[in-house]
Length: 321
Image (tube, rainbow, N blue to C red; front, top):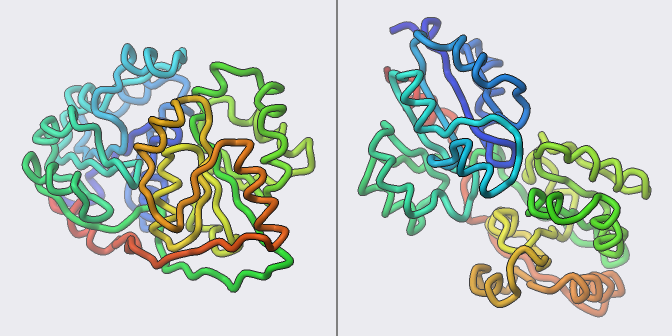
């Protein structure tokens, strides 16, 4: 089958859609690609109907069971969504692949056995999930999709420590707090950061405006951590966010700020104990940053542990019809 006769359909939702870099690459090289980030699509029924009957290679980075009922239970949104399993049943793709949106947890354990419906799982690196998933489908180690080049830490200048903040648990915070309450709660932390990169999520523009209004710098959420990380000395993440693992595996020191989405005890059991990962409550984190900027405390980085995305290997896999 000629690649011109094939449509590549990518699906996910907001921050749980990680396939953008691959989609852009394939579009630039002449492939027919349809991105269905359901956080941005007004009429997903119409989008799917227009694809019915085409020869489709399907790739998703979303949780397999996130149909409308489950999604509403977790996020209380009125967005219309379909799970990957529903989409596969409807579109009948000629090939199907899974790639994770989270560098730490590739998929929930209860989803593993359903991967036997996929032709393969493309995974960032070999961890415990990799070997468990291997029981249910073919697996290929292809590197991290958000890292397309090697990164190197700059020499830190004591008088100018630059900090990048990537907040998470946004759906939780936007549900529990008003924009003003969020801004008040995090104002001391935000004031100490040189730039903030929010995840892609419905309504995130309100939080971005809040930061800009206070004179802060926003990095557009289309950029990945690896696009900008070399300009900063410390990465700040939320709780057990995948950003913690991303920064750690890139060799950067990372500060995990514990919010109230989970208890401190639960978070500390989830976050790996590493010398490059600093875990503090919000109040403690502000003090920690002041100590760093006041040269009263040194931060340690590590070594790169995750390879760049192997685009050549990926293309060889997904172009086999």
